[in-house]
Amino acid sequence: MLRAALLFRLFLFALLSTPFAAHAVMEIQVVGGAANRIAVAMLPFQAAPGQPAPGLAQIAGDDLKRSGQFNLIDVTGTQAPADLAQVNPGAWRSKGAEALVVGQVTALPGGRFEVKFRLLDAIKQTQLAGYSYTITAAQWRTTAHQIADIVYEKLTGAPGAFGSRIAYVQKQGKRYELRVADADGQNPRTVVRSGEPLISPMFSPDGASLAYVSFEDKKPVVYVQSLRDGERRKVAAFKGSNSAPAWAPDGRRLAVVLTRDEASQIYLINADGSGLSRLTQGGNLDTEPVFSPDGQTVYFTSDRGGSPQIYRVAASGGEPRRLTFNGSYNVSPTISPDGRYLAYIGREDGRFRVVLLELANGQTRVLTDSARDESPSFAPNGQAVLYATVQGGHGVLGTVSLDGKTHARLSESGVDAREPAWGP
Amino acid sequence: MNKIFWPVLLALTLSACSSTSSTPATVEDHTSGATTSGQAAGGNKPAGGAETTGLGGAGVAGSSLDGSGKYTGDPRKNPASPLSKRSIFFDFDSFAVKEEFRPLLEAHAGYLLSKRDAHVVLQGNTDERGSREYNLALGQKRAEAVRKSLKVLGVPDAQMEAVSFGEEKPRNEADTEEAYAENRRVDVVYTDE
Image (cartoon, rainbow over all chains, first blue to last red; front, side):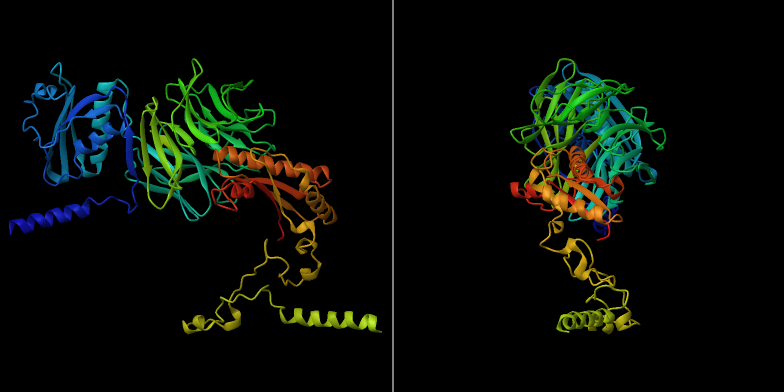
């Protein structure tokens, strides 16, 4: 009797915890890792009856693994400690751990949960962080990502980005969908569906809106769409082509590329579509603008020198200055949140790869070893670059760390993913 | 007498043909309710009253039977005329209009100058390699280059528009050099076809 009741509850719970949308989710594979990884023992959290699956330690542990900066100590067979206050980090130090994470989940009335966790320094035997949350089942994954962010920040000094989101375009046959998913590829939601191409999505700085280009009017037009309610408006629909939207850091203006004056030129426009002003001159091919984090500079692609290269110009206008000098094709700039690095696509021997440029000294590093890379986009914590590439004949997404050593692939069988953007 | 007999007979025959297709539809749509499966479905689908869709449009050479009698007259449909060729192809990374396309451009310029109400959209395309936004701009540059060539031949601005699809609408989706070459092109599309 008791067993049947238990099975019934598990079955009911499995139904309730089915993901919201029947969308297929992207698979992630990670390869490589940093030269010096921090050893962490992530113990299983004490579980509460009816809690969602997988467990918080599993989700947070996967996040940390994916960064390539951690070595997760094997904890198979370990029991969750019954009392979080009585934990002996020293026992784990002898197994090579530099840090230890312990936690517990207890069920609360009304289907809520209380989550507690502690991050301990295994060598100094001190607590580095301890938090308690009251959450609903719907907040489960977000909570796991927040735990991973705290562990990441305390141990590396850099902020985590495990709770951030990505946008990308998916093509199946002649159908296009613009999707927003968690940074680990989970919870994909379609925000635009079209029978015509969608390209160039970009999150607004506050993450509440998405700018993108749609060909549904049989020519490219720039839209801005609210992620909360799906309402959208045309921001640039001038004569000719309208494309390459890039938000200014204050979220009030965008840079766009228009061909209303014949050549592809960069203009600035208010987010409500008013106040058009022209930024580049000369009638060359200028495109792919992106603002610096302080809003003072616009980086862009131009063929004014005879081949596509990356330039910078003051956002208030002026004479552009060239930044790339290796090779005959350097395009698609994206700027790190601290403004120190540019990532872009460089073509060499016919191979398109992600390149990192340190702006202070002009040094470059090729980050990828593939051949058909496009659309690089910096992580909101500046630690990795998201991009699109081709594998096995179809479009997949990839991330690479700034040292070029940790690679991840996000892919979904049967569909082409392209045009990714990393947002808050 | 013989000299006018056959042309008159021909004209009478042709006019007899066109009078039987005097309904607004241009081409008989064989998927309309006239087929038995449509009627068997029940409901009120009168055999001749189903809405048909004309097949007139780019790519169907010379089969349109519209009432204005373009069937024999439109030089753009004549496969022997350079006007029937609508694509200008480009080298890799290039937007230069090659000399071999001069006869094609001269032919279309001549047609546009002779028909002042004709309009063309010049659609620029690229192969799929490289940045989508850069390719959108490169396709535009190719379309603009063709527009400027036509302008030099006397075609007024009002009769032309240059647009770009970048790499988004490839004619050939294969991953080969031949496919890439086929996609690096500008198509001359008449707005009335």
